Image 1 (spheres, one colour):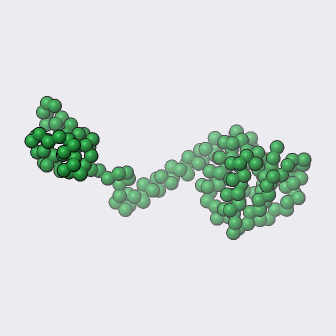
Image 2 (cartoon, rainbow, N blue to C red; image 1 turned 60 degrees about the vertical axis):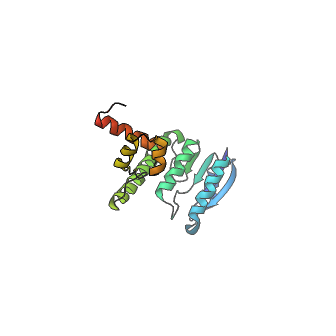
Length: 178
């Protein structure tokens, strides 16, 4: 089993090495206050390359890294079956931790989307693509005079499918056959 030895800014390396006697330590990442995000990026890259099957740390504290990002990383590691062990705490089975991490990650995503919607609502915006403004009189007049949908679309700058949907709705509402 390969181990990534994660050091925080306070940890003595010897204490952590004693916890994994005889294991190959492939990566030592030291987390410092000014480089915590970089340390997490390095761990992420090592995990994706398959260099790490177990992560040993004295603490999971990354100053300046959002809780959301840390939870997302932990969820990725749990989904990949990587065991995260803290020196001072018993470590849960990665399979047991995965549902909790998924729940936290989903919660953070829901909160992010809700915050975006609140911000848009406060600014008076609506999400999504703007609705097409169809000049009703002009389109109906051109249609009744025998113009094709393609010609109407060209004249109004609206797509053929939008013109077709609009005319179907108008014809259905007016009760005309057709």
